[in-house]
Length: 352
Ligand SMILES: [Zn+2]
Image: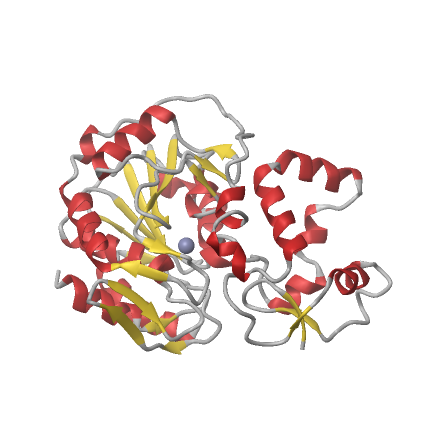
């Protein structure tokens, strides 16, 4: 494939879930190579008759507007945009899969819908059409920041074996990097597929104005994905395991990213949820707060989104709430009065 030109033409689209631009992007780049589209809109293709490896990515981005964006390259190497984010998460994964399909790399390929809205498409497959994954032993998402990571834990619980992660890292020519991931689509398949992972595809600071990707590195990853000896990759049995090592904090609180965070208590809690999921769950449970309270709270409905994303950068709209205002908002008497408080696209609570 003419890597840079083709990839850049894909990246011009800003594609919120179910937006016009996402539809146009799918029509132009994805649908022509796929075998079919399922009821949830996932686009599916298999390059062999009995695939044992599934590759996945997602077509939606966290852009707030549907349309096109201006792209900026730095020495033809690093790509950024003039928009609220770049959408390399997960345009890179889409591109890599198109290239693998083009090269007939054996596999099942799923372009998921609504990953940024909590994994709508993958949840549909896991719950409604699990037979799609019959015979699939390995599910690899191409939807991870950085350059070396092979994720072994998603949201604190083990999703693949250490042995598998080592083999996959060696196929990708990486160290295996950080084994702790947050959520991506393959997390929805852990009960159906033996080994589920997510690997770095050379973007950084996703979901923010600073999002960027490395064009040269993407070219190298593409080359490895196409030439890897996938039949040598094995699936192993492993014990379910929960990660209690506090490794997440550094990404969001002690790195340079934290300089842009305006609401420290929010981000301290965000870190805590990732670092100590069981403590947080027990605390919420004892306080009588259910999953529905969180997922269907008014604040999430107003945002049309139950996926709170990291915020990096300077506020560009609204006024951030301070702790007292947040507390007042979430006290049950006040919840229904404060209609002017919304969650913006960065997951911040703001007065509008
Ligand atoms: Zn993603």
